[in-house]
Length: 335
Image (cartoon, rainbow, N blue to C red; front, side, top):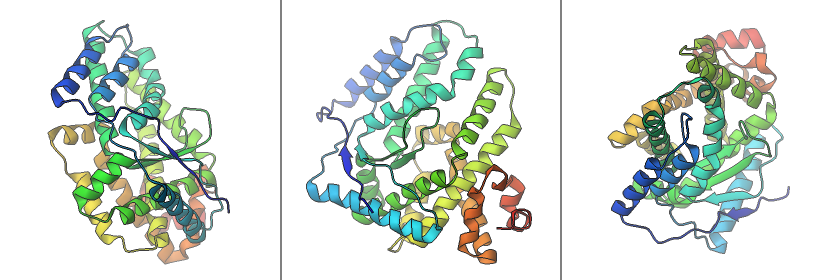
């Protein structure tokens, strides 16, 4: 099996400005927002990066090989545990926080396009408020995302796999865990996502379609509860299966890592709590828990291989009720 290579992120200025300068740059970028759209995306990007220290991505040769070795190990172990034959994106990207923001702002823009097309806003002030809100969301996420398997929602191109190095290092320090073991554990989780999306080529169009439906309804001042339920069920399945597989594939103890990372997800200052609620990150934690409980129950009843039947086709995804009552899914799908 060919091994992945590690691609460092783009070069950046490592000199960190003072918090006051950072704040003023961010405010200045929002104040310069223009146009009649709901969000000035260029200004939001400028404000988010101005408010976010990029962090260092310096890696020596040994550290670079360690990233590649972790992904190689995760790939082989997850193939064995899941029975899914899949490829891992290469090169692996090691990013700073600005790289992550730049890589994801386009996804937000395309996902929110239906709202922008339908929304009628007061010029000037409303656009600046929305721009500031988006900049804040991007900045907070840019400081917290540890790694990401990107299946390219709303974008063309092959999937990507990247790690936000300064966030990984900061989290390992704050959580008081060994950085190498923590990095390897995160690698296993992200590689598990690669297995899911490659096993289910219909999954990306399904997610895109439900997001477009939900956002379009919001643009009309309505709430498409069916699309939201479908999204929640799909993401509960995605996150739960990744947790289920990585637990069986990871080659070290992990209980302390999960406990401390869950505490980190629940914690944070007032701004982080507000952003978590806006983005449904508390919901995401529940998706991990409910999804994993579903797959554990399926494995107990039918074996580990039966869990992978969720990726056969769209009809094999569990419904919200089946996630709560796995025996109903087992009876319907007969994995």
